[in-house]
Length: 83
Image (cartoon, rainbow, N blue to C red):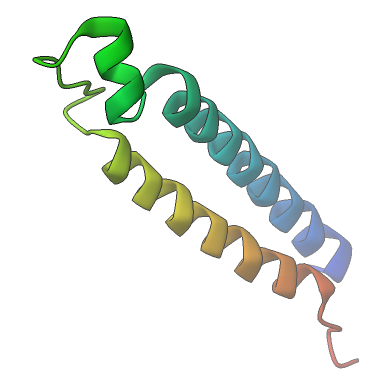
């Protein structure tokens, strides 16, 4: 059994990757996969924006799932071990 400090180190690393993924996806949705009216203004009305076969709403769903994982990891990080 690992001691609490090692467990927290693993949890912290996973939280870091979650934050980086949320930041990257947030920037992707904000600046690359533009919403409809912004896409029309920049590219015209006949353009659909995708990255790796997914559009902005699918990326938003992944963003939300990662956020829930992050919240779960935060709870695991905070709760006492019971010893």
